Length: 250
Image (cartoon, rainbow, N blue to C red; front, side, top):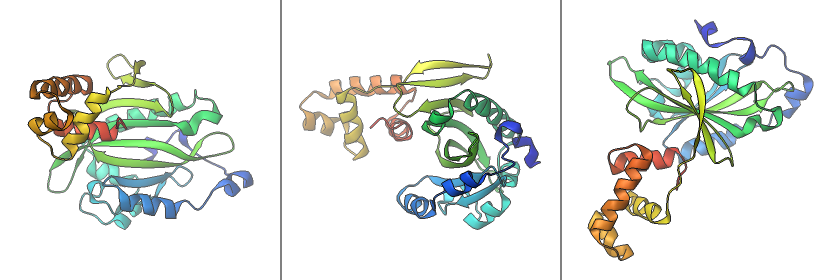
């Protein structure tokens, strides 16, 4: 089953001495990160085709311990990802690595792919999660050796929403599943006023309280909220806050 996820572009057959000496002891940094975020973290090792680390954050675990999920590795997907989304993950895996293969080796660690899929536990409860994957270590030939994955609750309504971003780049690449092609779109930019509205909303301020804090009318706050929702494609402030956090807009 695991072979469904692996093909020549993401299979690491041999590691050179140079590759092995390049690896740093990253685990303490990952442990510290896991203690400070609600997101679930795990590390994929493409040389062993296994999960090398899984954090104890419960969102991704589907009732298991972190060690149990780590031991399952890719078999976890087959057990807990819905059938239709398992097929989607296979497709994302292929198009993602095809895209990655076009990037200059020197820039490959600057890229992150993001997408949404459903997890379904033994109690048949489905949740839509967002996963981001970014390279940690590359082989001497430029293949991904180890990748960090972060899993959080999705702000979207459906699976998919495949996009690739580059650090420091003001555009993102979104994949059109119907037309099977990548489209380039501008990164969402918030105005200072929109950021203020978000920041106060995160702190639990009401519309009237925000208006008092920044010396504008409640109608002005409502206007900026509507602009925020339109930009993000969300319908309420809770979704907007999640979206802003997941997309580093604040």
